[in-house]
Length: 505
Image (cartoon, rainbow, N blue to C red; front, side, top):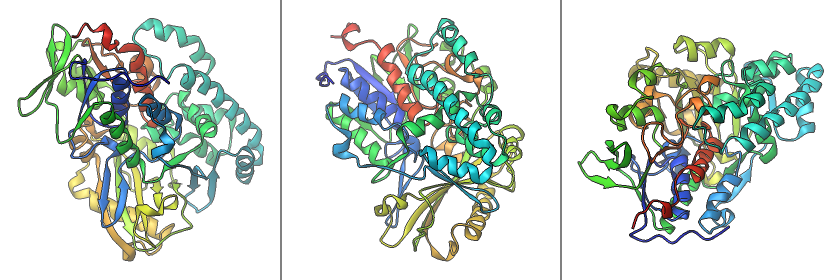
C-alpha cells in the first residue's frame, strides 16, 4: 500500500459533514489521496451514531456494536500507513448471537457449520438440508451484492441495467423472509434466519433478499468487538485523520451547503462563518442533507415532496444501564424475540403504532471487555425497534413507562435483580435521533432498504443535484450497518476527482 500523499496548506480542501463511521472513513480516504480534510461534527465528541456515553465508571457505545468485516477497517489504517492491530485489539465473539424465544428456548447462532446444523436439528431436523441450500444461496448473493456491487457507484440507469439479470437470477424481487421461507419450514428457524435486516433498519417482510448476504458475510469473517468498545475505533480513525494533516471540529453544526453555478463550494455555519472547499462530503442523514442543507432551488430530484414520500426505517428506543453485579450467563449479543414476529413488525413499519410487546437486542460488551465497567460489574444496553416519528407517540411521557416495561421483562428473564442492582442509566428515543442526530422523522437508519430504494434508487454517492457534493453513510448506497457505511466511503475512490485533477493551486 503506497504512503499517504503529503498534505500542505495549499492542498485542495475537502469538507466532511458529520463524523459517523462513514464520514470518518471518507476523511481517511480523501486525506490519503492528498486532500486537506476538515470534518465538522455537530456533537461535542466524534462518532455520530457511534457516540460514547461515560457514566460512573461505565462506558457505553451508543450505537454500532457488531463488527462483521474487519478488513474494511484494516484497509483504512493501511491507507494512513498504519496497522490496525497496532492500535485496536479486535476480539472474535461467539456465539454471534444468542437468540432467545419468548418461551425461553435458546438458539446459539455461530459461524461453525456443524454447530449450526446441531442447533437446527433441535428445532426441526427436516430443515437441515434446506438450511444448507439457504447458506449456498446467501453465498451466491454475497458474491454479487457485496463483493462486486457494494463499492460500485450507481449513477445511471445503465449501471442498474447491467446488474438486472443477476438480480433476477438471485431472486432479489423476494423479501428476506420470503427467501428464507423458500428453504426452511419451521417458523422459529425462519425468524432466526431472517432477523438480520433489522440490524440495518429493514423489515424482513419487505426488505429485498439481497440482504440475506449478511448470513454469509458473518460466516466468512465472523463477528468481532474491539477492546475499548467501538468508540475506540472512532478515536483511532480521528487519529488517522489528524496524522495526515486533517482536522476534526466538534461542536460545529452546518447550516447550509454553499452553491455556486451548480457546484458545492463549501458550507455556512450557524455563526455565519463560511468555509470554502473544493469538494463537500455529507455523512449527515441523506434526507436531512437535501431537505435542510441543500437550497431548495438547487434541487430537482430530491424535492421536499420526494423526500416526504420516501419510506424510512424504523426508529429505536435504547436504554443504557450499568449493574452492580455480573451476569456471566448472558452472552455478548442476545436477540430476545417476543411473542409476535410479523404482527410486531407490521405495527412498527406499517401501522406506526407503539405495541405493548417487543423484541429486544441486549448488548453486554463486558462479556468480551470487562474494562468497560467497574470491577465486578456489568454494562448493558437494550435496544427495542419502535416506529419512527410517523407514529403518534408522545415520547416525552411514554419513554419512562416503556423503559419500565422493558426492565420488567429483563428482570423476569435474563437479568433477575436488575432494578436493585442498577448503578447508572440513560436512554434515547426517536426524538434523540431527530433532534440530536438530525435524522429525518427520527429514523434510526435513514431510507428503508426495500428494492425500490436500493442501488440506483437510493440517494447517489455522487449527488444528483450538485457537482462535487458526495454522500456517504446509511442513507446512500449501499446502505446501513458498518460494512455498508464503510463501503459507501470506499465508493468515493472512484467518483471524487484526484486533487491533481482539480486545477487548484
